[in-house]
Image: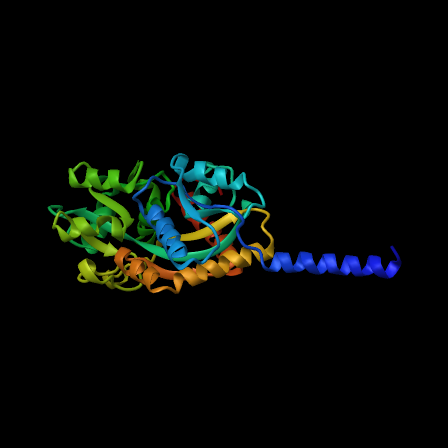
Amino acid sequence: MNAVTVMFGLVTACAGTIAAAQTWSPQKNVEIVVGSAPGGSNDKTARTVERIIAQGKLIPGSITVVNKPGGGSNIAFTYVAQHVSDAHYLLVGTPSLLTNHITGLGKLHHTDFTPIASLLNDYIVFAVNADSPIKSGKDLVAQLKKDPKSVSIGFATTLGSHNHIAAGLLMKTIGGNARDLKAIAFKGSADAITNLLGGHIDLVTTAAGNVAGHVQSGKLRVVAIAANKRFPGVFGDTPTWKEQGVNLVFGGWRGILAPKGLTREQAAYWEGVMRRVTQTPEWKTDLERNFWADDFLGSDAFRKDLDSEYDAMKAVLVDLGLAAR
């Protein structure tokens, strides 16, 4: 083989490699992994994404949702992280990916994953029993200022979760000490809500979709929403914290991450798929149904957002006494 032939072969091989990378697509079943049991907000997100991808044939081949609950989502995080460089594994990421590392509950850092896209924000609501003497956000603030320990606050899934942080931010915003909160962690929001309905706790911080049915039936009352504007439907008459004089806007983001080591082409492929998912009428309908806020960010912007949110959450968790400075 002469030099010209060798050179031609090398150029052809390189071109083929570049073309293959640029046209990467899944070659086997794709798993979208959720760190909670079926039925919760994280699971709903995964199944909505799965349904839209499958029905729209947005990828070749199949995609399935895999639930791996436990350990404050650490089981799911570990499972996905173990598949380094394999773009056939996707993770529904939540703030617990950050808080677990900050509090020492988990060893994995968000930099151990490839950010694909942020999808939505699930703003926190503050709910009480319908017969509670706390009738409004202002009533809750007054009670917390008077005696923080008199209000037992339930949430999922661990101390230091974003639901716990929401309560801590409220205390910090009104000039109180976040460590004075009477905080109770439950395995899931459903457990916390059951205890609220039974009168065993005074308040639950959770996603709006988790309590909408109980609010509609008259069993629960939401006294404030930590969003920029009011929600529609059953929450139409519920004021935001800002409307009640408290500068509190906070929610739980959900996004898609993949194992560490993906190529830029693979990350771009999945970012494109997720962008197409969030542009469908089906996705927009699910946003409205679950009171989710559209919050799409591409891979690079999502990575920067994770870095800044890590620092912000650490500051609150230090205030709560759950992290070292």
